Length: 145
Image (cartoon, rainbow, N blue to C red; front, side):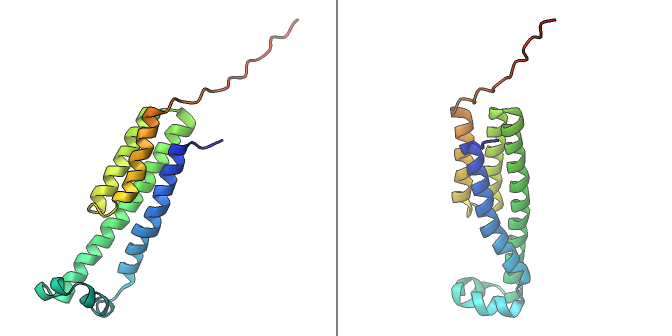
């Protein structure tokens, strides 16, 4: 079945989420405190002057956990939206699910994922604006008895 632009935007958003949110989650969860302080002390000197290395490391681990949870939620929401578009053609309901995915992306990433959320909002707008494709119904021919 041919996919619509809305579905492509949703899957592109999920792909970018997997790369950025999933990548951040994996990197932070694999990191040790020594690696963390060696890498981030030079990048964020004002943060490390106010708190200990362990506290900053725990905050980054918490952020990584939020990103991982957000990624899982986004995948579920986009699968549901694509199911609604593909099999049921419920465009307004799918638009609502795309808006939920965009909001989850914004809130779950603390507004860092706004370029990805824009894709979900664009998909929702296209679901509302575009007309649904007509379905081809094959009529059975009557048999002459």
